[in-house]
Amino acid sequence: MNLSLPLLAIAAVLTTAPALAAPEAGGGPTAPADPVEPRERYIDMFHQLDEDGSQSLSVDEAVTVGLTPESFQRLDKNANGSLELDEFLELIPSDEAVPGAHNR
Image (cartoon, rainbow, N blue to C red; front, side, top):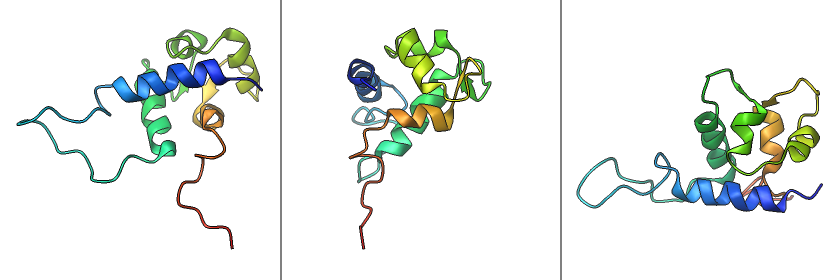
């Protein structure tokens, strides 16, 4: 599945989203010392995009980060017309999906 364009759009939103951006000097909460793990960034983004609080994303909500209707349909595994969190997390590149995991 080629979702590279949506991933670029999502990366842009993740780096500019107010809730995820570093605070201005002299005010606001301090950012954690370690960067937010990719899974947590995607979960945060999902909740930011879920404007109606339905715990799922409509096509209209998803296109705001560059998902095309075709990409949306491919991600919508249960074909219910919305993306639930587990479906949205499929956007995480496999090399970022489990940071810090050790293969033993």
